[in-house]
Image (spheres, rainbow, N blue to C red):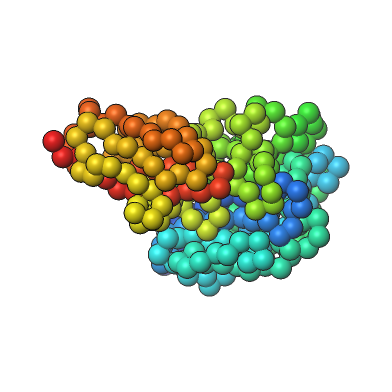
Length: 327
């Protein structure tokens, strides 16, 4: 009888861990904003909409060999119910005006001078643990690369990177991100990729612009960097067809004719920009450049009848408009 109870408890524990794993992932992180770090650093998580997160910790681990395994940052996540988009933003409203349904953890430590996040070798993890994870603790006391987390703790998701040129750093994940040159300033999970502890789920790079910028430097990015990749704090990750709200085309973007047959003409862009056309399955059908004060024609001759999404973006603006093909 006792063995049956133990087995039942084990099964219930495994079910609980499976549910937690399914509910929360690292989603987007900005550790080294252009210019001043504060108040523009942030970490965004993604989970199952409407789910409640408990006994989970955001844990960032030092990677420099002399102090490897030290807990540089710990944020406890307990009794948190995610909104309809499943996004949870950890940062400060001083830097980003995050709006519902994204949940905001307005944490003033992200506004301290110089920033709170380590710019060098680090491992970013989400840990489920019934025993508290504690800030300042060394979770690898002998620096052998094996974490000494509390008994029963489970790493739900993780990734890390090593400072460019350093060979002695220690990471606590198999998901190691790298780029063409330098050390990443930020990383973004590919929209729709829910693989935990996977380097292939991420792209990364250096940032350009001002502190709030989400624009990556084309010369210092990961080799898998996608067209249209950018930070999107509080919104669905880029690139995808859901990341921006549709704006009235008569005010911002002029597309004609609509419905169209062979070509569409685009006007109303504030500066040079890139365009992308998606069908309603999310497949990219066309892309190119839109030039300021010049009419752009997009060939849609081979498109079948139906609705399509035109997305236009540059460093300052991003918006989209639907149009129809009817032949």
